[in-house]
Image (cartoon, rainbow, N blue to C red; front, top):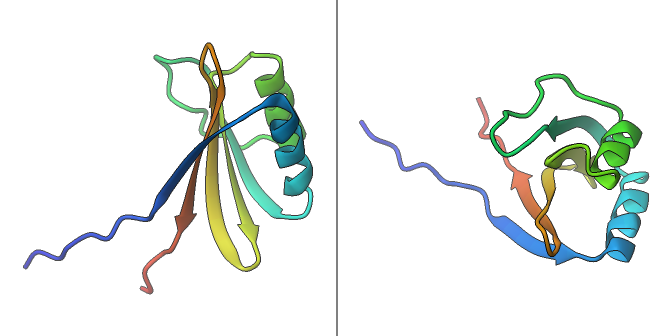
Length: 101
């Protein structure tokens, strides 16, 4: 038996520095439960979660390639991934909807 897999919607956008700062302020009102950083293009993300302030600091200083923030907002689980390109800051957002077991 094969069952079709439903993938979550993926939302993408770009942020300027002011919107990035507002993004981190908005997260203060969410329940952040994991912050993962990716060290570089050829490295996997760390397996250990950091404090949001540490992830933000590493991202702001360019000391990591990207950061993924996992949080609950209004009872729903979201995973946001931020990364910098030479010209912009990208945000990829996925709403997680886990199937009932």
